[in-house]
Length: 95
Image (cartoon, rainbow, N blue to C red):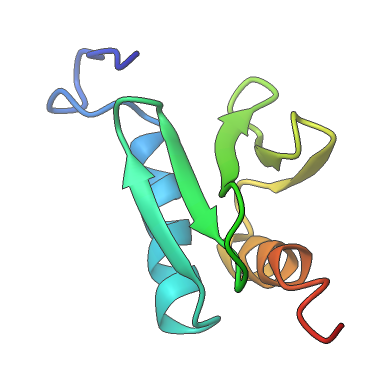
């Protein structure tokens, strides 16, 4: 579900930090990620065929969240969030 917010040009506020996170994951962490506006989320794909990781903005807009909200990182630290998500999605790659 996507919402339209006055003063944002029709863009949901969560879309902006999610797009910044996507750019960081793709450009610096070399992780495939795609924005899904229909889900208000970012899908992050790991190195193996599996379900993608769903990353969303949660906790009142304060954090990037994943793993059903069990994992989170402050919204203001896109670089750190990208590094943490890349480690998480690639945690079994060396096995």
